[in-house]
Image (cartoon, rainbow, N blue to C red; front, side, top):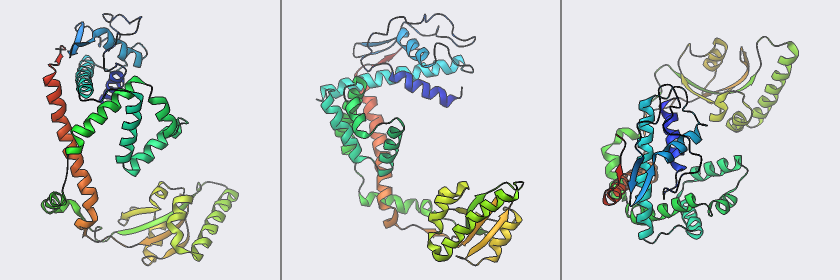
Amino acid sequence: MKKTSLAILTLTAAASISFAAETAAPNVINATVPVAPKANFNFLPEVVAEVSGKKLTKAQVVQAILTMTKGKIPQGVTQAMLVSATKDMAKRFVESTAILDAAIKAGFTPSPELAVKGFKGFLKTASPIQITQIKQGLAQKGETLETFIAKSKTQKQFQDQMAINSFFAKEVISKCKVSEKEAKAYYDANSKIFESKADPKGSMRASHILIKVDEKADAKTKAVAKAKAKKLLALLEKKAASFEELAEKESECPSGKNKGSLGAFTKGRMVPEFEQAVVNLKTGEISAIVETKFGYHIIRRDALKKAEKKTFAEVKDKLEMALKQQSVEKALTAFIKNITTAANAKIYIK
């Protein structure tokens, strides 16, 4: 198992332990029995961590991890990796427990009402891209935002998390401001970040629409593919501006996701037939059908990119958002550290 996989295991297993460190489920697997030749839980003390009078026990940690891994530590997980994972779990336990206690003291008591309010508040501040990703993820599970909220608002873990989020929003996030003056100062001090290089000398740029067909395919199969390419070319002859739309919809090359663009390339990077077709085109011109070993292409030669620098006005909104995010992350780190220190949190893993 890769280190990143173990990190995911840690997060998921930690999430399965409630913020209040409730009693572990019955039938806990014996924590002293090695579950893999070189990795076992013998290093864990009976109490792994404690904070605000709440304890995370060895049994709870073992149960959480082994439930996730179906009773056995995966092949490739070393003892050092297991120790690191359990330390991360303990750290997350003391942080989440101390933070939830602080949130409740500040008036953010977990409840279905606060869960709904907190989640809707998050949606208002989320970017359109985040909203789309959330909706797509829910759609894959046959859910909508409405059904997700209705289901989740009754779940303790969701209520706890939304209480914490609301607490953070008031005590930390709302206080993190980035002025236009600060953003401009950053822009001026880091001007090279906003510059894009020109395409290399001697390179070319092109986009294409590909109708794939194996070079060893029979004549009938090739004829069908070529006929499709001809229909697309006929559409482009009527409306050249639809090239990118057709590339995105019809091209059978991964570049279709980028509206057909292959970016900049130098001589010798493309198959000879394709390269020659690009050389023969003027900027903005669209080729006739070009056959290569990959199939049938309709090619458009694109203009080379020149060196340019985005103006402050062009990047202002995104820059302010990025700087605020940095400010929030820094402030949250300090805020969480202060809370856990004040709660006298202890982790007993050596």
